[in-house]
View (cartoon, one colour):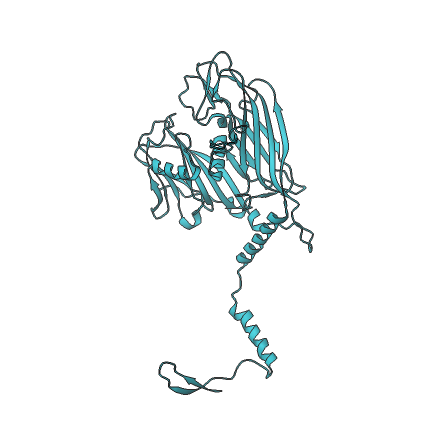
Length: 430
């Protein structure tokens, strides 16, 4: 077929020859059909399998959040009577198989009193040190949470950008403020006083981001939680390391009495999940359920002054925050015994490297406060640390002073994909 062309710059014309059109048929309907075929099959890029899965997951999540009924209910409780009966004891709770679970909230109440005539004074982390370990194991027998009470308090604080369960001063003409005993414990005990504490165990990353949530509306399997009470929550006056204590006594031998403890387990879940009319099955965010939201802690020993001390980030993980406390031979200092804190990746580049006061500034800008002395927080939510992208990733702490018994407690908040989580060891630090 011959066509006349015109060069718009020079105005010259020319005759060119092209092969006949590939469109078959002579009617307009044939041309339109071929044109539609070309646009659908050739011009529009096709989604990958991963993109289709994510699209279906996002649609399912939006539908669930729109139609499902949020539920917050007391499911389990246990009363423990007697003086100091709970100390050092572990209590196990079988969680209820119901709905799409987003978090567990543990409420603990009791009384603190003197053993004789001593005065008991709260330590920096106070009543949160009553719980030395919380463990949650899901229906696949995978351990989601394994850490202590103060870490869970610190994490709940970071997730809300403010002290968890606290009331704040204001100048309202209405008596707004701390009118209820929510997270409440006496700063000093000279007579029997009540306490109440809440501990949040997050399962989903966010109430609207269901990654990590637990689908428990099943008849087989059991998920469970265990709660371990500190064996020495009140220590004598001669004790130098108070990092794990809730109270310190004014005397060496009289270390108070904890009694009348009651534990209540609340579950936050979504009920009445929408049903697929074709299959009769619940519509679930399958990709989100493939994630585990992990809250873990690991102690690290062998710190040497003025030397980089490296702690590995686990492979096949997405880290959302890093917290740690530096116990310098039983002393928790407010940043005065560390030269710098950093996060270093495989090519020796520091993603973060700053003195503890600059780290503290970033923390204060997020939560509006400082954590107790010796406790440090680095947030990665805006740009998570995905260890598969960075390679061998390390937390680096360079201490200016280090007693012989110095150590770090490192607290991790991370996401993992279930089929990658079991064989995800780190490379050795170098």
